[in-house]
Figure 1 (cartoon, rainbow, N blue to C red):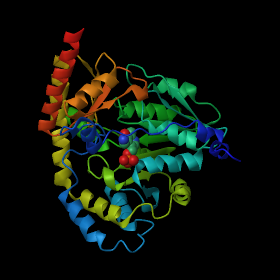
Figure 2 (cartoon, rainbow, N blue to C red; figure 1 turned 180 degrees about the horizontal axis):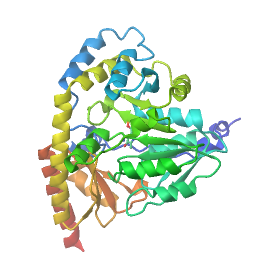
Figure 3 (cartoon, rainbow, N blue to C red; figure 1 turned 180 degrees about the vertical axis):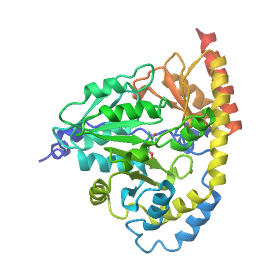
Figure 4 (cartoon, protein in one colour; figure 1 turned 45 degrees about the vertical axis):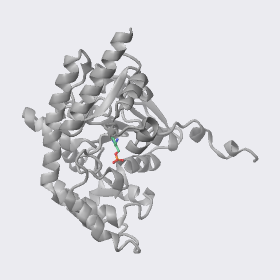
Length: 376
Ligand code: PMP
């Protein structure tokens, strides 16, 4: 075969690519001005100081392969959620778990179902497995669970539900999920992707409602896989650490597919320390809830459509080409995520930052949106 393309099976040729948010360094190189990043839903306070210390301590031992099972952290997670240890699997971020699920359960001739305007990794995972993804339209910016049930056929094996959803920040209630699980056929595994669980739990407790009992659903023997990550509230996005909770037999298959040693000793040590630093998590969640109120009020005052968030970011319809708005914001030193790649051509997603960052974003929005109105 002379062309590289000839080596590549059709389902990989037609794959898209994950386009990450711009890094501060990239943006600063482009504009030459100091920038803040509110583009990838990271923790604005950085990692827990306890995690940094644990990383430094673990650094001197990286000549050794890590514990392939991450036993200590696995035990801590199992205890934290009151689940058996063998129902927990750690991986290099929940993205990695999504690929493990795809490679284990999906394949040619099979399909997965999710929603439009949901996490952009789902299509990649499904396509990499040679399966097809059915995307059901949203209803008023929320998952249409009835529509998803209708889209399920005999070849469906997985449903992906991000709760809260990225990029809309919207949430499915415990009742909605329970009703869905009661009706979903037994040949389908439901992935409840709870990457933003800490934030959602905080918002739910403010409202006096329950956020999720997905883990209880796993224990009750439902076909549910719960995904969690250390990337968000725990501020460890750069270290790559996440986990799944599911039926132990299923976890055992996932463990075969997982790349061996993909969770480093440094990641395990950082995760253990981050779990113990409740104060850092609380500070993050409190700041996030305050920032959500501030940003929602300011953007609504500007006449923009803002979705109510249960996560650490906000979906804003700017009413014009989102890429142009993102460029103008970048020129003001603020990196956000334009949502054209999700099919929302006039929407942006902004991560909730520290108070000064939120203020800088609002000031920049006022400037760039006003400049546009004047130019019209
Ligand atoms: N699921 C959702 C819904 C997300 O938004 C993200 C991160 N953007 C992830 C999973 C993956 O997170 P990580 O791989 O960092 O654990």
